[in-house]
Amino acid sequence: MIPTGPLEGLRVLDVSTMMAGPYAATLLGDLGADVIKVESPRGDDSRHLGPTRGAERSAFLSLNRSKRGIVLDLGEEKGREAFGRLVGTSDIVVTNVREPALSKLGLDYESVRRDRDDIVWVGVTAFGPDGPYAGRPGIDFLIQGYGGLLALTGEPGGRSVRVTVPLIDALASALVCTAALAALRVRAETGAGQRVDVSLLDALIHAQAAGLGSYLVTGEETPRSGNRSLYFAPSGIYPTADGQEVVITCPSQRFFEKLCDALDTAWLDDPRFATIDDRMRHQDDLDAAIAKVTAALSADEVIERLVTADVPTAPINSMSEVAADPQILHNGMITSVEHTTLGPVTVTGVPIHFRGTPGGVHRAPPAHGEHTAEILAELGYTAAQIAALTG
Image (cartoon, rainbow, N blue to C red; front, side, top):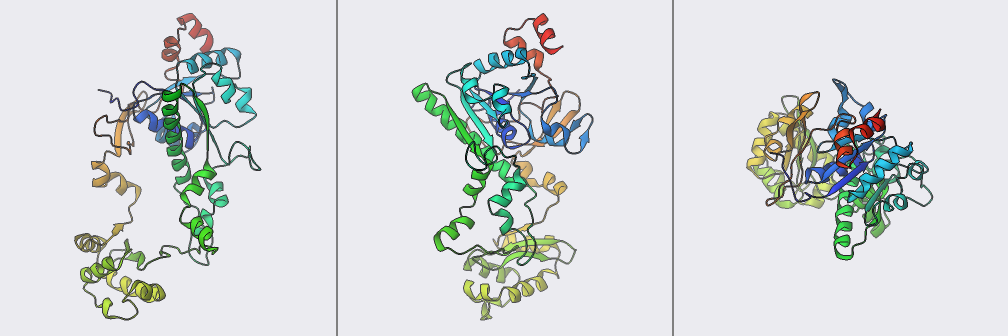
């Protein structure tokens, strides 16, 4: 049985590519919306990136579950006409197409609202729809530079290192969902749809409440700290006897006391380590002392001791270990769906857990244009008209 979810009855058009826009639509689909991915004959750019499985690419498969797929050539009048019909049946449109293509293809807000006046239209850009950087191309990596994240990552005195997980795209996708649902609430109260804009740059500045916020309050640049905390010690990555590493962090005095007990040390009696301020002044000595102890134990032994003692700790898991992690599996964050050509495909799960109206992964990522005929038939097209449109 296909799960429904709290957004059952809503229709979302995903007219976006890569991650920030498509992943927002994916989450809306996971929560029960009927998400239709509208692609050009070439397809989403992510269909051409990453390792292959059969004729499909990992980038697209990873980001586009819980959707149906239709191919429309919006460069042609007949494609725009079909898209207009589709808009008339929809509640939300998500797009990250840039101008001038946005208007040329009839995807801008004013064009779309002619087909449904109360549509909620969410535009995703790199920097914002206007202003000095408007119209520039941008991806997660560039935004890390503009928003100060690259200045904070890496070791002190070393080169900047990008955050390899596209966290800004993922955060922006969550903001798109929040914005769309808030706009729907306004529509329910007033009957009016609206245009909403979300940018990757704003998403990162939103996340920079600590780093940028500290500068705004004190006027002091936040230094690069590597794996260490700017506010407490210890906080770092430490070696173990089996060639692994573990994360250990103690954000309070009480946690440090528990660490000392768990590792059977007398660090609390050492004036260099007695208080948080003392430890911050002697971090090199403290890290060396911790590393000496952990290097005599296996990673499993360190983690078992510290978990038992209620000390914040973690392994450094590979992707295969993440996929097998018992808590991640328990949370349903790894799931399998049946793909039309590939058979069972394993994808990530739904990160929001409703107890009364749970969502779920409704569909496998669609093959290119997989549901074109089905969706056109729902819009009233005859078999002959569908053949003419898709031929």
